[in-house]
Image (cartoon, rainbow, N blue to C red; front, side, top):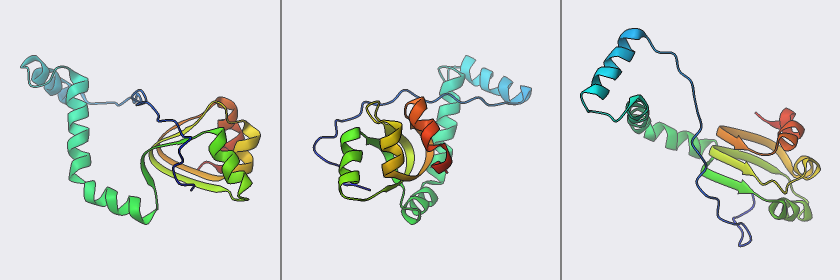
Length: 140
């Protein structure tokens, strides 16, 4: 993976990803009771807090796996200039991200195919539909 270069513009915090869960009526009732009693602002607040608590409980395991798998933790953004630099060096990327992998809108499907050997994202991938389609067989 190329080092972060000066021409890479900082990426603003992406919007949160939406997930859907199924939950039993009794659990949902308990959540609603805690919200009514003022422990949480709403259901989402309780669920986010519960998820963060569980992730905190397993943070050592996450750190070990990130290190073992050589994952980038957080946000990794690639522009066309970044990929052209990789191309000029005669290299290809094996992108591994835990968080958000972002491929800029100025990256063409052809450039992505020429420079990205594989793409593993645990979290979210933001790229144009054309780039996602071009890389579909390389996404793990």
